Image 1 (cartoon, rainbow, N blue to C red):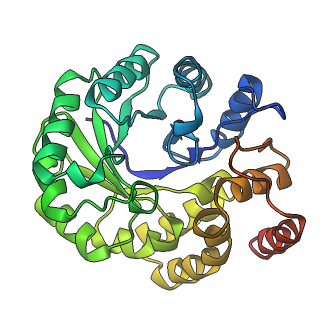
Image 2 (image 1 turned 120 degrees about the vertical axis):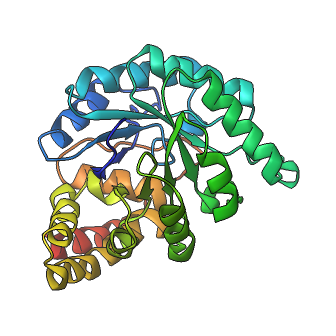
Length: 293
């Protein structure tokens, strides 16, 4: 069983100014993050611009991540495609390059036909064919499909489906999934805004964009909770909300990459049509980063 417990940053994908892949900076950013007591790293999630990359680029990022992440820490690879066939192919590529698990976002383009039965069949087929364990990814803000607890529980019964990353923020749903799944299924929250309540509900940890720029703050929050220092954990939870919201729900990947630049790492550009963060927003971002020092 792969242990997902802890904090995992969903790494943005580094590009040159001409939007070509920048392997050296991907590696350097991972090496910096791995100095912290993080569980591992996720590549090619939503923050990794999976939908923007060509197939050969996805394979290259999978390979870079495994090379840069020391053994003993895990690599989760974003593998969600619009077809079951594509998703299976991506899980095989990720497995070939040493990823420990595949994060699979549900297909969403034909969302009117993505019935519960269709999605269960999709995930179970992927899990049957994937050489590495599968983690369900519920991201309604991007996919427009919010999988309910009943559906997630139906998918979770497959022996090769080991967990859930939920970015919807529905604590009631998360609590039910945690309560009704066994010890071999681990649930992770997908936003630092909800880390404390998710841990209270029994989550194993989080895949948190904030961990790219304030990894120790995320670790401090979780450690305070685990040590029973609940007042301290609540205080940290409240302190991270403004910055986390800025680099996720409010201004997204361009803001997260700008924040990474601001702390001395390489964020670089997002791929078009995503636009750079405006200068006035950069000033707001710097103030939020300073406040959380």
